[in-house]
Length: 164
Ligand SMILES: CC(C)(COP(=O)(O)OP(=O)(O)OC[C@H]1O[C@@H](n2cnc3c(N)ncnc32)[C@H](O)[C@@H]1OP(=O)(O)O)[C@@H](O)C(=O)NCCC(=O)NCCS
Figure 1 (cartoon, protein in one colour):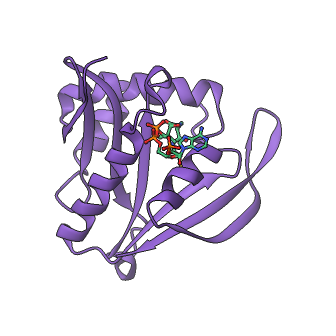
Figure 2 (cartoon, protein in one colour; figure 1 turned 135 degrees about the vertical axis):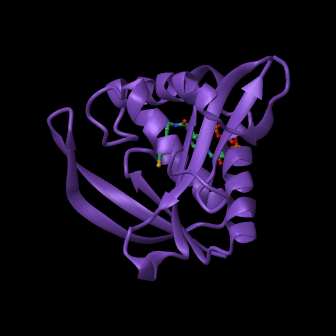
C-alpha cells in the first residue's frame, strides 16, 4: 500500500466522500443517517465549509480513502467556538493510522481557527471511534440513553470533548 497524505477536500471529492459515508449508513450505527446520501446533499454541504469548518481528505495513489470535517456544534451564536468532529475511513484501510491523522489535522485546524472546544458524538457501539478520540485526548463527558433508533434497536450516544 502507498502511504497516505492529507489535504483539504473539495467538491471534486464529494462522490468519494458519499461512497465512504454510505457504506456506513447502510451497514452500521456509526452514523444515524438512515438513507444513503445523495451527491447533491454533499455538494450543498461543501458550501458550508470554511477555514473554521473545513473538510479534509486522506488520499492514497489518487484515491480518497478517508475524510473528516468540522461542523457547527449548534447554529446558535453562543456555540460559535465549539465544533463537531466527523471522521470516516474506508474499511479496507482501517488501523493504519489514517483516522488518527485526520482527527489530529482537524484538531490543528480547529486551533488555528480559534475554536475552543471539539465534540465527538459517537454511538456507544462505535468502540473504534471512541478509542480513537480518547487516544487523542478527548474525554467522555456524558452519555445519552436511547436517543437513536436504527436497525430496530435503541442506541446510546457517548459525547467526547477536547478543550483546546
Ligand atoms: C473510527 C475510524 C475512523 C478509525 O479509523 P482508523 O484509520 O482505522 O483509525 P487509526 O488506525 O488511526 O486508529 C487510531 C487508534 O484508534 C483506536 N482504534 C481505531 N479503531 C479501533 C477499533 N476498531 N477498536 C479499538 N480501537 C480502535 C486505536 O487506539 C488506534 O490505535 P492503534 O491502531 O495504534 O491501536 C474507522 O474505524 C471508521 O471509519 N469507522 C466507521 C465510522 C465511524 O465510526 N466514524 C466516527 C463516527 S463518531
